[in-house]
Length: 309
Length: 241
Ligand SMILES: Nc1ncnc2c1ncn2[C@@H]1O[C@H](COP(=O)(O)OP(=O)(O)OP(=O)(O)O)[C@@H](O)[C@H]1O
Ligand SMILES: [Mg+2]
Image 1 (cartoon, rainbow over the protein chains, first blue to last red):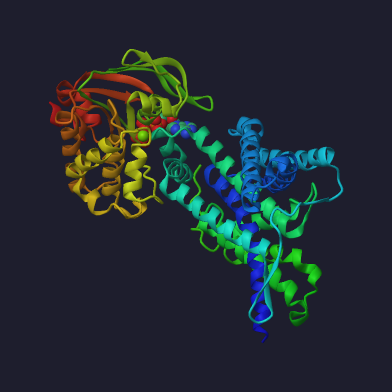
Image 2: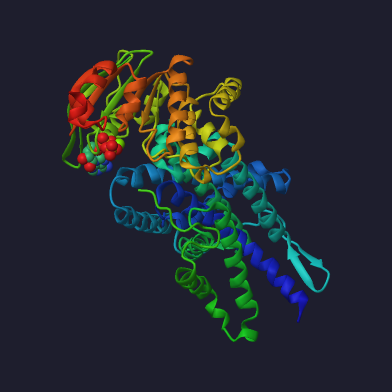
């Protein structure tokens, strides 16, 4: 057994998994408050990456002489704000008018919004992949045992951890977070407590979209190229991650994302040993989806369905 | 304090309330009794803004609140402990109580109100960190009432607080309701199928049948009314002779 290689795979897998986790949180939180899968969420992730590119391009003159760490944070936070606004707008314009309709209507609308965003982005930014700037000087750090980690991987892992801790604080300790959990648990009772349902739903879309933007920027940092259709596969895999963790369960989404990232990376890293061609990496998530739906439809941390109408 | 005039509510074209009128004076307990499907819960849901009113009006402290959004009605001072309790089962007892105070900003007053609630329902204090879904039915009912009180309402709507609860706990809960009214000064509109209990603590009662008020009198008169006795107090016609 080559422990060095395994450690290397785990580092790579966790970095990818962190990105899936951040996207999965948006799916699961929106599902929690609306019982609805926002299939346009992967495209918000894509817009987040483009927002990062353009914010960086436009603000470059101001970044002169600023530490890289600060300018990278500015790019990240502004892109998160852009996507939060986009998420809130999508909900207001596309989903809210259909809230009393069947779920199928909302689902089809979400697919429409998804196509609108990706083709809209193609129109605006062109179909060809664009290079993503190095927000932070990337170096490779050697660890013991022929293992290495890049600065970007460290940034992604640390930033994701910080975002998850902040999210946990918001959801567990703030008034808005409590209202979110109450709404997800029993919408009628939440209204009877004076919860402004529309405000909480907007907040949830904003929060989930901001996390997706962060994921988009981290993804772009690791892969250095972005394009209008980059959201499709990570979006679907993150959706699987949310289902794996137990849709509606916030800790589950984070766990599911990390697991999917790890498994995907391990399949590629050990493709020779296990006899699966590396090209099958994208199938990993789907195989997992089928297995969960067969054996544990409620997901790893989900309770058996307590659907509220 | 609360006045309902000619209220109509229907669900998907089927009428549930055919024009009911009632009045809840400040400081009183008024009860609404009637059998299954009479429209008691629909009345409370309409007052709280979670059922749509098709015609008629609901006036609270001189202000028309008909079809206002639910959260605005809570803000104006009407809280409800709904039928079936509807506690937030995944949230802790303490979080449920904080949800009751969702619209309040006065943190200090909230903690002193919590203490007052614990003297009213000491059992809740022992179970603060527990998920509300793990409470017994009676405890959940106490929590639902306590949670409604946490919003500091002017008017409290209670929907069948005795439903599915052991008789011994029902006694406790009803004496707490009296205390909430007499000592804490809350105005209460109480919906009950257990007419016997309800008419004992209320000052005025309305009898609802298939979406209409069929009787309306002081609780005392209703208790001795032969129709009420035979239909709602579980006594044979011979007893009333
Ligand atoms: N959500 C709904 N959709 C359709 N019909 C409804 C709905 N809620 C109530 N109804 C109907 O409205 C009528 C009045 O119901 P309501 O719940 O107000 O009665 P209730 O007096 O509270 O009865 P119970 O004592 O059984 O709780 C009933 O015929 C019921 O079937
Ligand atoms: Mg009822």
